Image (cartoon, rainbow, N blue to C red; front, side):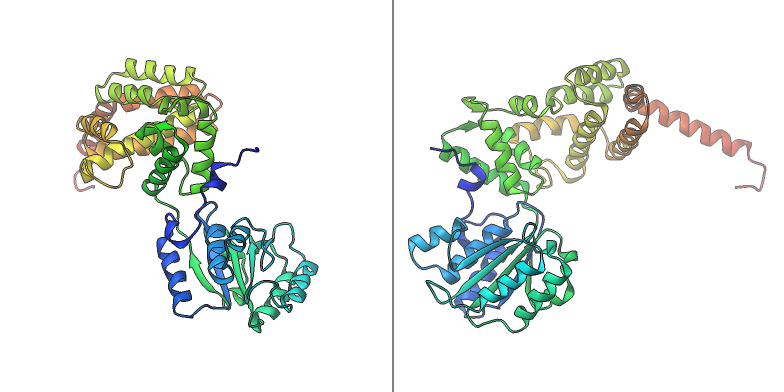
Length: 375
């Protein structure tokens, strides 16, 4: 049998199993329960946060009823729940076809649902044609419009919809779902790799599941952070830790050597600095908010290790280092000699206290040289 991707196999099937959009799920379920279903809805949010899955779940609750119909709706193959990809059906003729078909009664149930994905891709003429139907919709028709760019949907369309904004899914919620998926798939996974995949998903469950799928395809008996770093060409976590330890010790030589080891893995200076800045941010948050802060997604072991590492710095210094990393990353991107700029940044980070002393001395010298009465 053909393999089905995890992102498809583990899509939410009902309101109770929705991950990360529980508030939207509760509101829609209550609307059905109380008989307060509007004729049109607008689901807004970035990719992979559950807009289309929620649209199908909502449509199933409205137009389903039998196991066969429910399965067809969730697969996007039902006769009474019509899914349209506006990216490839964006013209006025497509909209007119939709309008003409909307007048026909549903073939199976009492409700016909139109799910229009990426609705912002419709042309102006298509939107105008759709608007006419949405102004006076047939009793048996419901519209669910999905978009990643709500600002491109005309106000005239938005004003006729109940709008729901889908937030990016927290990494902790994604990691919990990935843990359940691994358990069902019979695959072992270290906690730190699940958290890393969740963070790399950047709020998108679909992206995280796709990355997990790719990781599982490596065929390892257990998923590890090392394999993920190798697969994606990410900076080695232990090497970045060694680099930070050298910076904490003021060891410019050790920082340069750790930086060289990172680049030898095939990682560019920009990505190496980005990873360093991210780790310094973790240390800063731990110092400011305490070791149990929920602002960080770390395994217990990593939290303890990073907490001990954070104790070697102070928050103002870390804040300055992060700003320096941001500048260094931009310079590396624009410089004809990115490696030179990378090395210079590492030396400056490792010798930050000496640079601070020089800055203070220069400021004192400037004040001493100023004429009396001058600021």
